[in-house]
Amino acid sequence: MPASRDARLGSPTRRYGNKTGRLMIIATSLTLMLATYDCTRRRSARFHKIAGLHLRDCVSLYDRADRMKDQGISTGICDRAARIADHHLSMVEKYSQASRYPWLPVSSDPPEPE
Image (cartoon, rainbow, N blue to C red; front, side):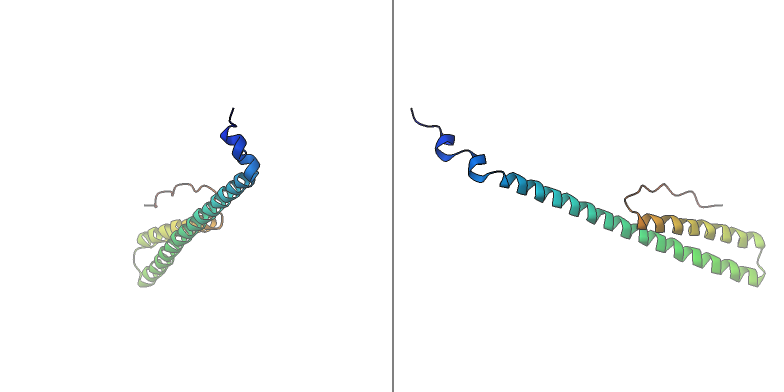
């Protein structure tokens, strides 16, 4: 009776050992780690950009409120600009922290004050 194909060639485990399986596990692990790192890096960069946009708006509104006060424009308008600037400042803090810790969840933004 002829020997089976596996018996003639040897089993795959016998021929290659477990090296192929180990290498596949290592390659898969490295791929997952690199993908996680890349996703985290891009998320951090996005939060950093959002923080910068809020910072720009915050500085602009504070400057505008100061100019309006100097020109004697209604304090109600100046107070509103200052409230909106405070809102943008809180968003700067929120997104700056999110860019430092991009793996943590970020809550939704509160509405801009009236």
